[in-house]
Length: 129
Image 1 (cartoon, helix red, strand yellow):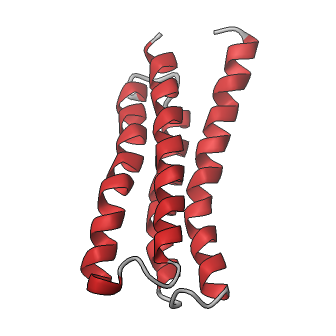
Image 2 (image 1 turned 180 degrees about the vertical axis):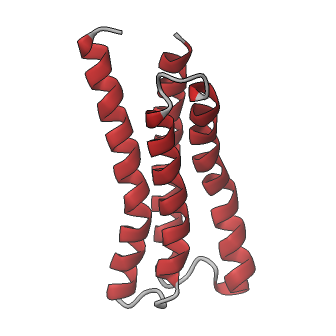
């Protein structure tokens, strides 16, 4: 890998990590605006922590034999977020699951997770090469 590819790879990890941190920051914003309850911050902290830790471990294992495994997990984490977020919101709130700012949070979460999927696919491709 040349220095330009290395720089792009590092910036991809940074963007993935920032998107992971935004999971909790979005919830903090909606709680401070009064749309969601205080416990929603904890629900944003879980995907944030998982994606950040997995990204850091994938970046650390880049030169090791476990790199492919961590990059696959890096892809799996946002896919699980895409699947579980609407299900969790529905189970938790039932009929009111898309009211009072919840639809906006769902859309933002899904967009961030999709962006993380694309980043992780790109990183997985560079990891295989």
